[in-house]
Length: 214
Image (tube, rainbow, N blue to C red; front, side, top):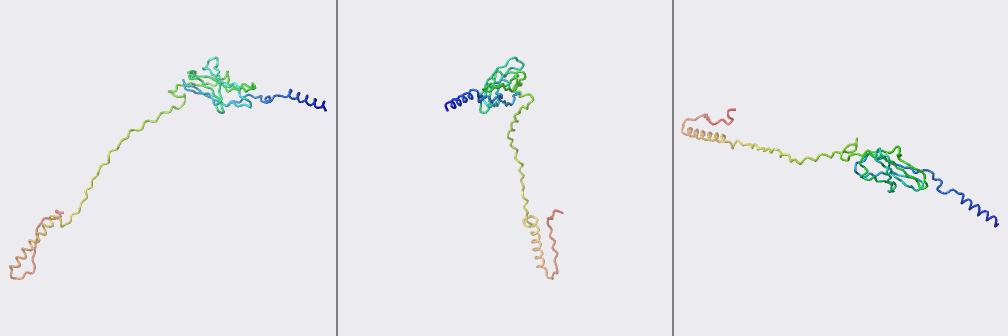
């Protein structure tokens, strides 16, 4: 029984010593997902972002940047921001066209994983912010609205109603009536002085023409 236990203990110790470490299964470098920066305004700090994923912890994520055509790169470390990594290129370094690439390892040394490379870096065209990005559409502010113009008031049309004047209110009506009355009175006086009967009497009234000769 004692020998059996000792043999079992030796086997367990040997197995523990020869067992592969738990991280040995992670032999792949990190995976970098990045939207490449191709244009940037001159004199403004530039943020470069990327998602870097791995089964293990990420180690030494960096952005390597240089002026276009230069020989050496500057190494700018990336920091974790939420689910991504960021590197900030200083504003004074953004004064001409740039080249960059991203590099990262995992904690076990797998890598480097890269987006771009030292031999084929990603190029950034730096432009004058006052002129806008090359080939882009510069937003033109809309013109100011015209000042309020008060339209002139519409002309006032005064309509004078035409009042119908009754016949009894016209001057010629009463002139005719007066003539008739005078003629009738004269006729009555003549008849009263005559002894013989009279069959009929002609009365002619002379007055202004109310129609005006129409």
